[in-house]
Length: 351
Image (cartoon, rainbow, N blue to C red):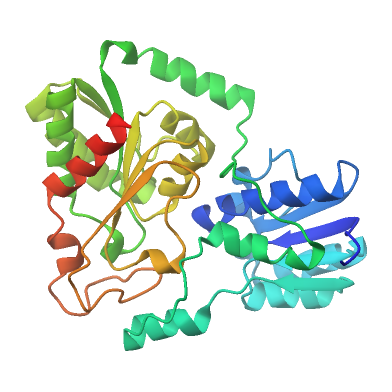
């Protein structure tokens, strides 16, 4: 067994889900090295709020990508001065390779991304994955040389009290107790092929609002505002003017996470908000289009159902999503019906 490090730096620059999925590894590392050891985290500035309040971390180093290579060199110099015992690279891209090389840690461990298996599945449609390992567990694999293993406590995200109280007050004003259920919808995603049609999200919201006397809360970023507004207005036009509330573009990542905790179930595309909901142990109905569970990004540590079209030989066409369907038919999402997703959501609400 290797000697446990006293000073560790963890690299995961982006994005939302990838960073949140690192939380079980950070918890396991802290448990193993004890409260006095140093655990630092390197992350892009725009995602830093996800880890700033993490109780297991000592220092969060924020990389400002807008500074380009100059910013990278500045960060590398700061890391080199720390003289780390161990670097844990959970990203393993050109930037983190440079940072870990220049920072000169005594030892380095790197995530196994299963790149060869992923390439074969995407481009040759050969599934050579021996088993499906969630990304959070792949992160934990990096600590095996130190005999460190994870627990069964799922994902974590730490929310400062002022944010939690602020969101609680905002939602309390909506008198959610009047409704039998509170259901979260997340219609957005960065890539087109990971987005279920907004019209179907709207119809789903209408059906659930009417059947369960439910309040529908809609979440997304600024780029999702147009689709989320369409979903909210469509629901309110049919199910009543107070049936849905659209928070897209209004909340920070931590504020969104705090609000998701009020939901009885969250229906989402394969995107970062799926992992934020899982971090609060919300039941998640996840809709997968161009991606598949083999890539490791399915809900972790919470009750969940993945709704996907397994009848297509063109899936997966990408491990991150595409701007358009390469076949032109988009059947991976087009053939998933509202009834399919509603059934999954209702199943989770009954559990």
